[in-house]
Image (tube, rainbow, N blue to C red):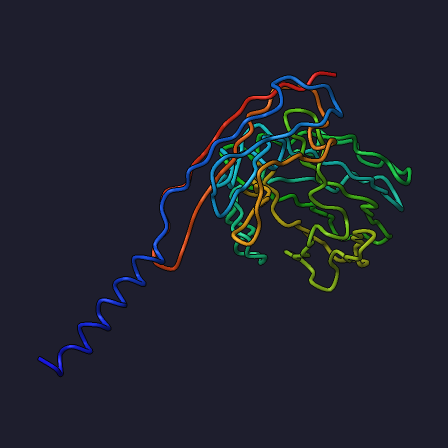
Length: 295
């Protein structure tokens, strides 16, 4: 019995420590100093309870609680534009193609295996003038159902005695959200162009950070492609909240920056309170408030 006594004491102490290190679901309440505010007004949230951690989701773009696990959205547009220059004779022998089933392997076999749609007629191409603007073209249909679109310029020519070349001077692929906001997805230097030759490998697209250029060599037929990376305008980064309290701080009131709500509208504000220890992580507590911002 005497030999067992120390083990019994240790077991009781360990059990006591384990119980002590457990935490409960936090008690937490939130109140605001109003429900309607003008742009630039101070908004003050008052807390009761003692949660270890608080995360603030103001409901503004990029900080919506419901979108914390979202990786794609719907309704965004894929807008493309570029400038071209056709030199040494007008042959109109460059086409613009789009695929949404290209597998991303940049070789002749896999390019041929993809389905490509000719969208040349949607753009304005050079007929001899430099820096001819294509116009901004909506290619969103190729990104429906969370698909990614790949753009290609194809240069095809029979054997020529004289020179002929195309230059793509600028390139922009942009994401337009339903509210009209434009987010750049790629420029000429960031579109990750890859050149693939189907005929006469001695002549292919030349790629630099400022332009794409294809020029036939004398007396040789050419079929040269240059492909961009894939673009999915509906890819979304999960929203993130603002951590305003952790276990090392006390917080009984919180006033966000006065320019956080910078547009008139109605916002669902969420406060996410939690306790945690190495022993357990009880349920989080969510408190929601609706605030209206007026001009």
